[in-house]
Amino acid sequence: MSSKINTQIVPHPCPHLAEFRRTSSKPFRALHACLRIKPPGGRAALRRDPDEVPSCAACGLSAPSRLYSCMTCAAVSCHSPAAGSSSHAAAHAASMPHGHQIAVDVDRAELFCCACRDQVYDRDFDAAVVIAQTAASTLGGAGSPAIPPPQPENLRKRRRVDYRPWAPDLRERATIATCSGPIAGAGDNSSPDLPWGLRGLNNLGNTCFMNSVLQALLHTPPLRNYFLSDRHNRYFCQRKSNAGDGVGSNGPKRRGGNSGGSNGTNNARVCLACDMDAMFSAAFSGDRVPYSPAKFLYSWWQHAANLASYEQQDAHEFFISMLDGIHEKVEKDRRKLDSEGSGDCCIAHRVFSGILRSDVMCMACGFTSTTYDPCIDISLDLEPNQVGSTKKAAATSNHSCNGESDLMSSSQNCGTSTLVGCLERFTRAERLGSDQKFFCQQCQVRQETLKQMSIRKLPLVSCFHIKRFEHSSTRKMSRKVDRYLQFPFSLDMAPYLSSSILRSRFGNRIFPFDGDEPDAPNDMSSEFELFAVVTHSGKLDAGHYVTYLRLSNQWYKCDDAWITRVDENIVRAAQGYMMFYVQKMLYYKATDKQVAL
Image 1: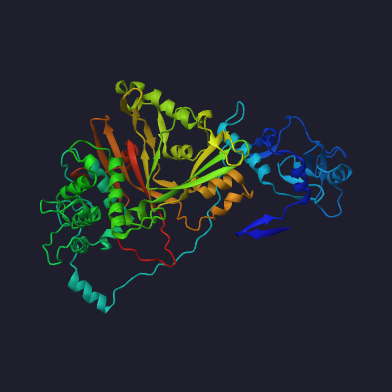
Image 2: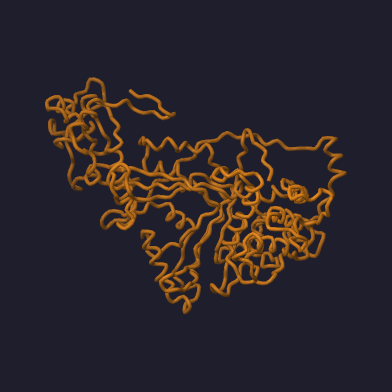
């Protein structure tokens, strides 16, 4: 018997289980110590000697019936679900006083009521099983490697909207003829072999960090489509800003948006989206002469005054600051303070925003605290040398490996890491130390916990930042990690989704907090494709940023003003610092609310 609550099937409570819980004090709290995890797949079973073959205490048979161990006296009895078959488990429960009706499956670690002759559900029992499974997958058994998690199931097929090609009617053709001009082709200048929109950017004085990120953003497909379709018109935005400041709409217009000159323009009128619109217009104009993004640099300086200098800056810091500037401008204009988490507040978040899930589980009772945080990129630690180490050990390993980094070449700096391994390490459950005990709301005391990160919502474009710069506050020094990182050109993010990790962790078990995890109706396609790699070469204080772009299945190296075609092996050998992946297939919503920046 069962009922449906919040679209989930929940069994009716068993009266014998309720009686068992009333008469026993914390009956399942120490059960996880009596369980063993059997590879492959991490199935839980009762712990016993390897050579021991369990059998029914009444008939001595070990097959084909299921065997159940009494939770009160540990007697093993058989039970067959076939109609008319005898059940020594039921006979044992009938001959014993209250409390002997509840048993556990010897091979499957599933709770069973011998009186009802049916499986029963108890959250504390399943929490004990999960603790054993998670601890085994995290630490592994004695002398044995950790059990790898099972492969995630395929995501449920989502509703698709058929793509309909568009052709202009007579009125639209007239509008196009009078209000637009032809776009220059790729062969109009000195580099006919370069694809459309690929244009070098002049270095304005240690601005390779900015040029490298701008090249990646100029060829980010959703961002490119947004600006080239005139979703943000810099001239209209400027007139609206001038009207809000009391400046007449007939005032002087300047191509390129806000110039940031000495005409009284203040910081409130700085719009990085307008400067991005000017950048896209310049890059896709067909002109091959290297472009100088001086206006954009000046506007960014006004937004991030603490970084306004001609010193070399961090490319990842610039990426975060620039997207924050676009978001901040829209937030001031529209007052959408509660839209950031949904990813619909501005074009920056609609393209790059995702949601991370953090689960902190009490090791004593299994209580889980879940939090969600928006993110526009994922920062990953490089893998340690020893496989299976915890994150804390990994940080120590990285620190010790780079102790003599000044004396070591890049090829000798602590081996090789992989992006897939970094993602697995990021989403792997880790046991927090005794100094990081979590206050359990159920136990009402601080307990040791397991923490696991996962991705609740995938963005359209996933940006992965590799932590190559280490800063030690105790030694008051910084260093760069030159370890080589292998990254795939195609990446499946399904194993790192919250829905996949929950299925791997709990299987088909029902948990009260699973209701907030629908089967990913808002998750997009999990297949991603690499289109841009920002690399860093040299040392921490004297390095250089270069971007590799994939356009029309051909890789190009963007080194400030110089654009050259390169082989994909050159890209694979590069020292990746930021990787940009775009979804291979974009799913259209059935009803899409038009939101203009």
